[in-house]
Amino acid sequence: MPLTLEALAAPFPERTFQYDAERTRLYALGIGLGQDGAAADLPYLIGPVPRVVPSMATVVAWDDSWIGRLGLDATRIVHGEQRITLHRPLPATATLRASVRIVEAVDKGPGKGALLYVETRLQEEGRPEPLATLLSTVFARGDGGFGGPAKGGPTPHAIPDRPWDHQRRWRVAPNQAHLYRLSGDHNPLHVDPDFARAAGFPAPILHGLCSYGMALRAVIGEAVGDQPERVAHVAGRFTSPIFMDETLEARIWVDGDTLSFQLIVVERDVVAIDQGLVLLR
Image (tube, rainbow, N blue to C red; front, side, top):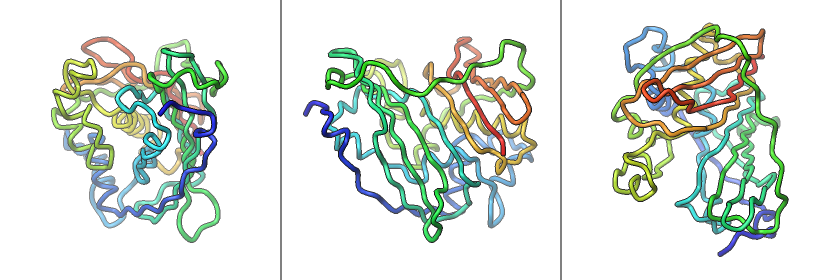
């Protein structure tokens, strides 16, 4: 079924999700915490109320059923950008109501795909104010030509033109995607070699949102004094795939409460996440 303007405007049903401290610790393991035995990781991994890496907001209400509802070609979808606005710090355990809507759709034309800007609003049960607002940019490579506008979308953040102030390196574990998928994203592209080759990759690639969480954890550790509750907004653009067993380097620039970052694949000298932005409260 081809994508239509009517389908894009149709509302999606609200859903309820629950998560607990055990799932919060599982997410931390999924983005590499505890891998090298660092003492700084322990508050995220032990204790009845663990610290929360704010990027966990992207998985606590994981729901990609809207892809099927729109009739998109799921085999040709690429995650382009991710933004998170945290109206208050993410708790270690909660019951949430999640609502999804398409806020904008850019038509690149027949055979050129479409850019969909998908907003997810998270609200904690029993509280009237929103907890977090997520904005995902999805490149639906097989779904252009639906009659939408040819331009649009938010303006990306510019990385400072000077040497970075902090950096951190780590290795992607061979089983990292298997750990991360336990938080909800079961796309076989990240764990099934045959599926990955059919999609045009020589091997499974790491989830983009896993590398996003890894980068944010590095920023918090290097430039925020391991105070994740200070993070009010995160943004970044996915620019290159990452494979298991590669070495990653986060480069961080500090301008007061505005932090910029890039994530580099060291062996291939490519930028995997660009135009990264963290705003502090």
